[in-house]
Image (cartoon, rainbow, N blue to C red):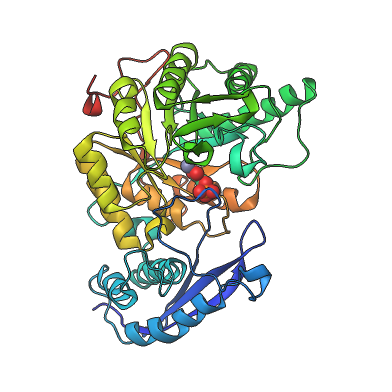
Length: 441
Ligand code: PGA
Ligand code: ZN
């Protein structure tokens, strides 16, 4: 018989940027206890659920989360105490109902998500299952393919260049361990290339990538190809490139402003630019190619590019079931970025991943730029068989917590192992016409 919830509480801890965040702890009547921490974004989308911060006059320059912690220890504890955990979605439904707002702004998406994840972990522990297996339910658990941040720009690296992430996608390997090794080799070669060019920055960007000052966004792609080759890999066959443009954050008054290049493009100009990059580079995936409310642009992007690469919606879709439905109905995007704190519960997150899968959208489980040592989303990526995981670079321990957890899962340290790496079709450069599921060309 499923255990009951005995108590829920929360503590203010710090994230990888040194900002306060929440850790919730759940205790069950059978004595099991488990906790979970929540992350926080910097290049956030307008349509995300709201994290609750104390605001002006509060500690940590107003960023403290003591009100959110009090909501966990007060109303959420009261509402959940004694609940029998036979239906995993029930606790999330109760919290959503108690909050009562569409964006979880009353109790805070941070408060609700911390409890949601801690509960899932407590349930897994109480059942004696590894988290990924407990979360999987009827889904086919699989090791994900990592998309690893190598170069950073935009809001994560002082806007040296506008595009936010240039990532290595090591798809030509048999195991997660080999894929991570390849990504680490590319990153290390990139350090050498930037040093030789006199462009190696001091320190690392928010997600552990390198944030150099470059002459153009395109130069980042040149550097990526050089680093992949220098590491001994064939670009497009073993290691390809993904971009997170995070275009919302350089979009003003209907225009995309590439300040570092001294030019401005409209949506058609951006799509033409991506088209040229797809011709010239082993590019397999573009995230937030256009801004969060540029639905017409997104539809045009999918018509023009959707057969050649993944078009991932992050700020566009914000892990939100209704925005995903709109993208499905209107043929905008071909994949969804999955960030639990954009929606605020595990149940709604799983609903988005399942619906994406059903409609032929790929799902990419993602961390935030402000992260913690919690590795929950490594288990989530495996459980959902989503296929991809994007948690930043291979430095900084808040990133490595996820990669190292995946290495342990793959090695069978939980006593059970999921299937191998998700098969990823060689899109783009050397690839076929790409993804027929969503190809409306
Ligand atoms: P964020 O960035 O966590 O700052 O929103 C991550 C991303 O844009 O993918
Ligand atoms: Zn993004």
